[in-house]
Length: 241
Image (tube, rainbow, N blue to C red; front, top):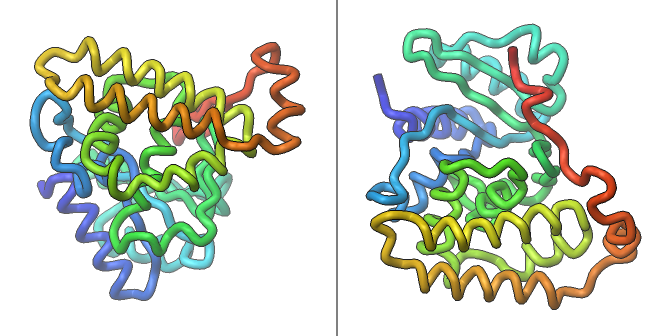
C-alpha cells in the first residue's frame, strides 16, 4: 500500500498528464509542504485524500480515479457531483474527496483563481484558512495549523488575502478568530512542543491584522446579529454515507 502522500502525488501527476487540475488539501497537503508535520509532536497520519479541482475537469477526474483503481460513489456523486466527488479505494480502505470550484464546509472558500498558486497543493494561505474555518476543531486540525504557522508564516502566508476574506464575512471572521485563540492555548499545553513563544507572537500578529482590516458593510450588518444566530455550517450533514 502506498502512503497517502505518495498516492496523492501519483494522482496529481496523472491529472497533470491528462491536462486536468488536481490540488491536495488537508493533512496530506500539510505533509507535502510542512517539515514540522513530519516529526513529533506535530506529526500525524492523514486519514483520507482530499483534493480541489474545477467543475470543467469533472469527467476527466472520474475517468482518472476509475483508472487508478478507485470506485465511484455513484449515489453521492449524482446528488453532489456539481460541487464534490467521492471515490473509494477498496484495496487500501482509503477514500478520496474532490471539491469542485468551491470548498464548502463550516464556511465556503471560492477556488476561482486559486488553483494555480502551487503545482501540487492549494496555497499555504488557503490551507491555513481551511483550518481556521473548522468550528469543531480537533487535534488533527490544531497540529496542521501549527505546522503551517511554524513553517510558512513569515514567508508564504498572505496576511492581506486572509484579512480581506475575513473582513467581508463576519461568520468566518468569528470562527477564525476563535480558532486562532484556541490554537494559541493548544500550543501552550502541547507536550514536547518548544516553539510556544514563536506560535504565540505569530498568532497575535495575525489576529492584530485581522482586527485592523476595514470591515465590509455586509460584515457590519451581520455583526449586529452576532452569535444569536448560528454563523457556521455543519459539514458532516453532506458527507458520503
